[in-house]
Amino acid sequence: MTTPPQAIRIAGEVLDALADGAPVLALESTILTHGLPRPRNLETALESEQLVRDAGVVPATIGVIDGEPVVGLSRNGIERLCTAEGVVKASVRDLPIARARRLDAGTTVAATAWLAHRAGIRVMSTGGLGGVHRGASETFDESADLPTLAGTPITLVSAGVKSILDIGATLERLETLNIPVVGYRTNRYPGFTVADSGHSLEYRIETPAEAAALAHARDELGLASAVLVANPVDAAKQLDPALHDRVLAEALAAASAAGVTGHDLTPFLLDFVQRATGGRSLEVNLEVYRGNVALGAEIARAVAA
Ligand code: PSU
Ligand code: MN
Image (cartoon, rainbow, N blue to C red):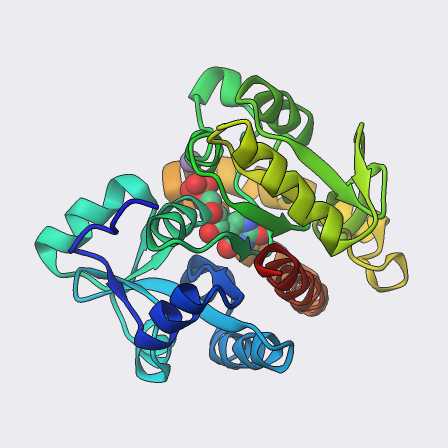
């Protein structure tokens, strides 16, 4: 492992765990700053860290405080990102701007994975991954999550990408970018709040140990890409697919009417869907996230074993 850049602060507990070869799980923070409403964001942040600890794994929530990227935010840091005004959303390209201007920021999957890898962390959990937006053939709006993961050797647990995106195009781009995607106990690519996005997956795994074996194989081959583990929500707990389809159409129309583009688009659509489902999508969102955190912790243990 290369020495992490001086500019990244790594919590002592995380450094100790990594030095001991003990399991660590990285968690992103854009879900907290821009994905979930207050106060559920803070409750979710603290609850998920506890879930990770209960599994015998050290949590490392990652974000930016006063321009400084922090791997393993303190409770104060998490509270600040979840409650302060003016917290921005930082993907990788925003990190230097946040640093120069001393901003607070929630880090996207891309920025979180990039920082986690530089700190030496090998497994990360998120809710939904960014991807190719609908209409991207015109707008070129593809999340930096995809190219960043192509060059970041980490194992990432997500419930797929949200249906606000073009899922077929996202899967095509993942193939182009040499990023392996495996279903966790499924051959269907999940659609975040729904268990099946309608797209199939070629490969599936059944155990955390298989995920660890994949990461190991990737390392032995000297490949730099992430391994994506797609973990579907329990079908009994998913959002009603008919409700989902109707609200999604409304959200897309509202974004287009309001002229929302760029990195504001994902938060806009997520917020719209949350409101329009009367909070139902939020409950499913949290269920999905807890599932990914729990599986990430198991995989972190398997990778460290
Ligand atoms: N998908 C969700 N919730 C989220 C995000 C994605 O269901 O909060 C966040 C993640 O942090 C992801 C980012 O990395 O949005 C992608 O944003 P963009 O499309 O601007 O790259
Ligand atoms: Mn974008």
